[in-house]
Length: 240
Image 1 (cartoon, one colour):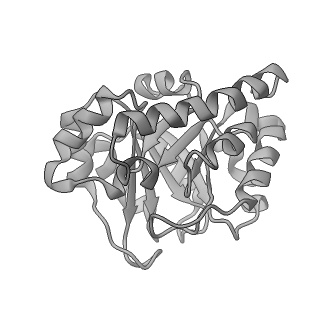
Image 2 (cartoon, one colour):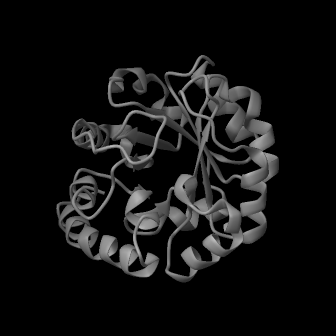
């Protein structure tokens, strides 16, 4: 399925930075989004948790809808919920551009991927650090994106799990992977971003490194400067 227009633009960004809005100031959401747009982020990542699939509870469709009113940048929704298929239509109506859900969830992945595409959104599959890529492989030809978790799903601010790097490298080498966006989420900061990009990450979900800094602009610029040499080296080898 062709990428939706906003997502197509995001796929053309090099080492795209998507702030994980889990740590933003929700009391001033529009202002947070405006500031992040001004410093040049490429889109926004929304972690939706149900208290069942993961032991934490966050926001849902109303927050995504509010974000859609505040920006034209892509909204990348990450469903950490037990039954993602039940909410595909609602997130489409809220304005999501990408919906990613976990292969470990209870719903049939093929059915959920088809539903996401049926509502005109890009579809992604995520896997936790302990989950082997063999669980995702049967569905690669049905999804647009693979999200490799470098922390267990459920909470922000966890340390980076380096097993994610070998997963990224394996995905990048698989024949079908050249048609997929590879995203990484968890513990991404200036100490890990270069490795993530070098091993194949296209989209970088960043939480604490932005929101717990004193200056969004300097944090985003530093992440980009750190990622650029790794991206250039990767592209020079022909590993897209």
